[in-house]
Length: 256
Image (tube, rainbow, N blue to C red; front, side):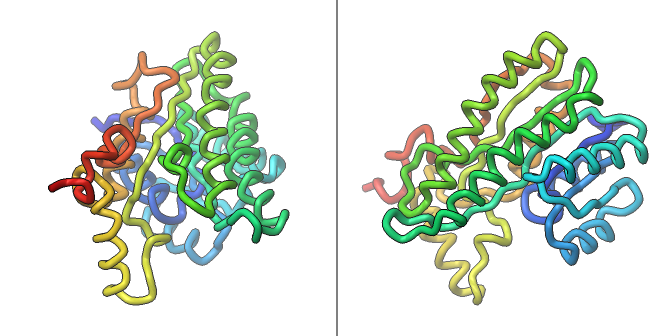
């Protein structure tokens, strides 16, 4: 029997990258999965790939009415909701001295406001034992240039998670955060495979394990947090980055 047998999961941003990989894994472990995304083309492709145990809905994570509609459809279709993986997020460069207000605000709207209202929409249907998983990022703490809005948004996720833990613990609902580092997803791909390989090699030099992560490695941590295997894990941040955050000086770039 799968680790998520009989459970229903909502994964925002489930139409590509880590979200899509997690959706495949959750279904393989017995869950029914609802995925959301902005792009109808990738959403339809994901629905086709995932098969009959998925419901794909085009939605804006930062639109409370959209998310309430998604949750209502999820419960109407599958009868319940046990897992919320608030994974949808965007990243745009916001260099100091050259950033439009609209770009900065859009990152915060999707990555912070969207996460809060995704959880709020789901809350009336979550029962004791439910699991909420948030997506952080090592960008929250690594000081990457031109990423002020994105870094701030992921720092906000860490702060918000603590508040959600306090509010939801009395109801027996768990809230934990997965913090990915550099991961091989479509957003890293360059126009040629040679450029992509070069970028991955340069990233690897900053990671103690000397490689980027695979989406499956993030998805398996999300599966742990979604399942009853983590029934006493509450308010945790699990960093999945090959050691880059905990031991930056262990990276190949510093080795003799």
